[in-house]
Length: 195
Ligand code: ADP
Ligand code: NI
Image 1 (cartoon, rainbow, N blue to C red):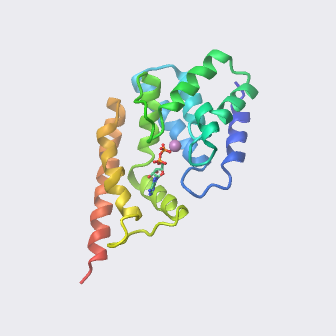
Image 2: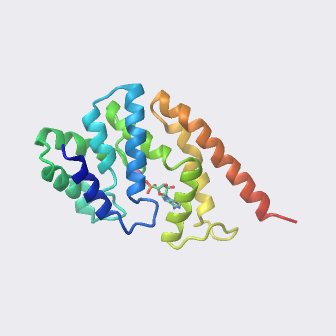
């Protein structure tokens, strides 16, 4: 497979992203997923493709129809001459990766890609991404009167992620990243209530 072509297409697609879903997110998730695969097993080709392509048809960036049919991921895989059987398998993995996905991952490959994506929402990078995303949807960093603030997202989602990891390797990595989230929230609240 022509990985350079894949990278070029992803760089082009995500070049203007300032919501924490930029090309570097794809690269980190791919790298984490390959590491998880080296420890846990699973089909390398499926994990590699699904981790690279997992946000191409995210419901936040494309139409409902494109998100459901994985239009952009399919188009790119066709361009890369990936066979139809692999394309279907990769699309099935991507469908259960999203945080808001209704299907829980069943295959090891889907579990690994979801773990990798969630790890990138934790720790120092996860903190940076949350505020970037929050700003992109006009949310204040914190508010005691408006529950739609980014610090609230830590309680709603980020601090729960460590308990939703599937693989043993991801659980281990998540421990430290979870601690960093907790420390950050403590420091944030301490400074906010400075007297
Ligand atoms: P998915 O697209 O996989 O369903 P999300 O969009 O929920 O996942 O999360 C992807 C990234 O966006 C994470 O880093 C997450 O913290 C961030 N994010 C999602 N919703 C919010 C929010 N309301 N406030 C701040 N960050 C958010
Ligand atoms: Ni992602």
